[in-house]
Length: 293
Image (spheres, helix red, strand yellow):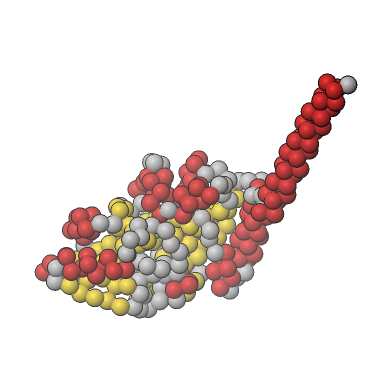
């Protein structure tokens, strides 16, 4: 994968557009727009709550939860700080201090299920096996920090077995049906992205469940962290995820030339070039000698 393709895959906007092209994925993609004042106003009027997030970013950094409350009051939370405003203009000015000149997106807010009064979402790991075929290799719950709006481990979230988080919401049979659906959705997403980017080997799909247990695709990470699965008591899932993760890195080393390799290639090219130039010079010298004689 070249650098321009890698840049495109890091763009949440670009990945969202690719997912929307697939009929069976589209219903699970929350409406997403580019961040500007007009879009913020219309999205808040439509949904009441949205997330403003960097187009490129990881670990939940820079994500803000924005709400339009009763009486036309506005509020947003950034990390552990919540601010309230009487007017949209004041809200937008304050938000823009965080966004700066970087590209941000506005995403329909999902009222996530909770466990012990804390929000949680789900990470579905999808990886290629040794034959190059896609497999759903792991699924884990991510319980958010009690005072934060994101669930990422690096932002204070807690990786947990999914059944622990769902047991107060669904029966075991319903849980099994849901897990099967999420794994299938993860596979469909991987195959859809593969049409445009055939060389990537793993994704982590972050999925939020609303109170109707509808899965919503919050984000697709093309550099997923395998080590969150090590937090589970049962290490079998972690061992499989890690082995496929290592396989992906080995394949990447084979397919992507190192800088040293490129240097060696350039040296060889220069050697061949110099040989050619010297050969031409010798030919010219010989021809001159022949003329003189």
